[in-house]
Image 1 (cartoon, rainbow, N blue to C red):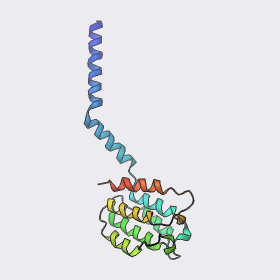
Image 2: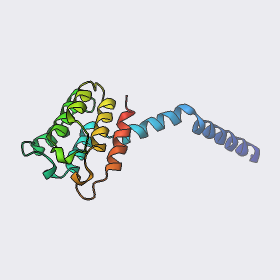
Image 3: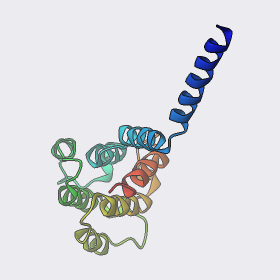
Length: 155
C-alpha cells in the first residue's frame, strides 16, 4: 500500500512539474500579465496633459475638452492619438519648450505616425523637449516615459 501511495505521489508530482515547466503555460501567463499592465494611449496622453502646468499652455488651448477627448480615445486609434498629441504640443507656449525644439518639425513627423507605437515615440520626443519647469511639481516624467516605452512595444 505504501508503494502504491508513493507511486501516485511521484506521478502526481511529475505531472505537476511538467505542467509548471510547459513553455506554453509560461508564455500565456506572461502575455496575460503584459496585457493587464499595458496602459492605453488615451490614459497616457491624459497623464501627460494633467502633468503640465495650466500656465504652460496658450490661453486658446482648452484642456478640459482635450482631456475628455483623450479619455474617450480607442486604445488602437493611432490617428486620433496623433491628432490629440499634435494639439497638445501645438497648444504649449513656446517658453514651455526646450530651446531649439521645433513644434512644426515635430508635428510633421507626427503626421506620419500610423501606429500607437509610433505615436508613443513622438510623445516621448515631446516629453523630452518640454521644459522641466512646465511640469507640475511632483509629476513623474520617468513613470510617463516608462508607460510610453510599453506602448512602443505594442503591436
